[in-house]
Amino acid sequence: MTMNPDPKLQSVIATDDQYYLQAFGRRTPLCIDHGSGVYLYDTAGKRYLDMIGGIAVNVLGHAHPALTAAIAEQAGKVIHCSNYFYNEPQARLAQQLGDLFGDGRVFFNNSGAEANETAIKLARGYFFKKGQPRAKIVTAMQSFHGRTLATATATGQTKYSAPFAPLPDGFVHIPYNDVTALEEAVDDNTCAVMLELIQGESGVHPASIAFVDAAVAACHRTGARLIIDEIQTGVGRTGKFLASQLYSIKPDIVTLAKGLAGGVPIGVAIANQETATGFTPGDHGSTFGGNPLACAASLAVLETLEKGHLIQKAAGLGDHFREKLQELAETSGQIHEIRGAGLMLGIELKEPIAAEVKGRCLDAGYLIGSVGTHTLRLLPPLIIERAEIDAFVTDLGQVLAEVAST
Ligand SMILES: *Cc1c(COP(=O)(O)O)cnc(C)c1O
Image (cartoon, rainbow, N blue to C red):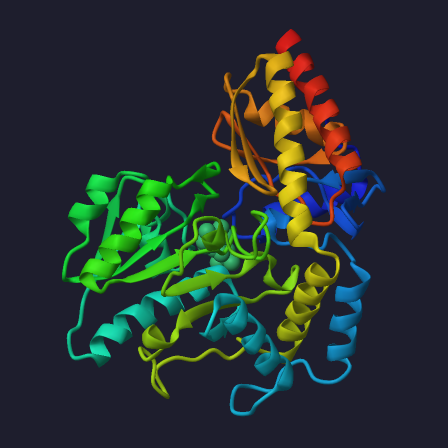
């Protein structure tokens, strides 16, 4: 990665160094100014093809006219009114999400972690209300469920929770895709099994069908609630509205966030009727959750996805992307494995060069993600087109060749 000489960037970095809590450390040296479609522009005017999409958030890219108009129109009416009162965008979005899930009931939050907190509380509340409280929640190692205390504890990576002990009780972690461990862990004291169908944050690792089927069966056997965290896989990312549809399963609770309002903060837990009995009036709440601004933005996202057939397109684009990457794997010899579904892709490299490849892609005008030393992560907006994917794969080949020759 070459030094970025942008003076605005240097001044923003200096201010961040001094004032921002150093939870991110030094970030990618890029100060975003604005975006348009699949492109982002930095404060020096350089254009980048956005292949990370705000980590699966910007499903409609940047400054999409339909989303921008919906936000502006709602902002001109009312942004917030509290949940003391009804608002129509909230009711309409609840209906659409409940129907997409299938006879579901929803609760809105402002983020993924909060949606998972809602799911955890709802599952515990469900058994409490039945007069048979259950504590245990089984989750997978290498999972990612958020940064609040409960969701960081649910997350199967101790680096995210250990410094913040004491942690909430009841969370048990099993190896991902280990059917036997799952069957042994889930018992009559198990309140919920909580899983991602494709682990995103730890490097795009799909669940095996056998593992998911075993989770469904174990929940069926014990009555435990199946919570599927679709915060990253949901909203069309994998070529279906929910990745649960790829696995032909119907969880008791699904959580969504990231792409749901195209960048306006929102989170939702959607539960079936039975599980929804876990909350009665007064049990849960959120000041901002379900506010008309976020809900209007989300309604515009869902309408735009539908009108443009963008979810079906994401499935086709994902297949095309994988084929192109597979060809590159054969010609370059540097790619170990390509994983994922739809427009959620991980490229595992043979050598520990992920950070260097990411830096050179930045120089070449592409924003990509990396996980650890070996994996590249791609989560482009669903409005991306074939020509942009093809250009990226060609230039990634160039970058891999450069890195190989150094
Ligand atoms: C991003 C993510 C979360 C956390 O969402 P936040 O909005 O950052 O709280 C939880 N689960 C999964 C699978 C995620 O990808």
